[in-house]
Image 1: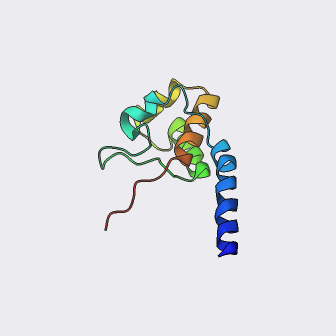
Image 2: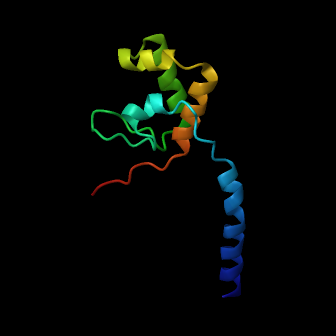
Amino acid sequence: MRLSLYCAFAALMALPAAWADTPAKPSKIGLCAACHGADGRASTPEIPNLAGQNLPYLRGAIAQYKSGKRDFPAMRSALGMLNAAEIDAIARWYATRLPRPATP
């Protein structure tokens, strides 16, 4: 019992440190949220969910859209309105969001 209480207390004390790693919501998230949702969970099945995606994957996909390797004009247009720091902040934001729960 005592060990269980100690573990629970230690877990609670670690929460503020975990929250500190969560980036602030980017000011220009609206460009992406229009399609992908502010929380990264798209409202239509044709649009990918970004919530919880691996950060290196998001960075790679963004680079492919910017280079034209992934040819989707709407993405290239949206990315063209953002600088590198804004794009990285948005990618980090979506990587820290909780993904949509799996449906059975």
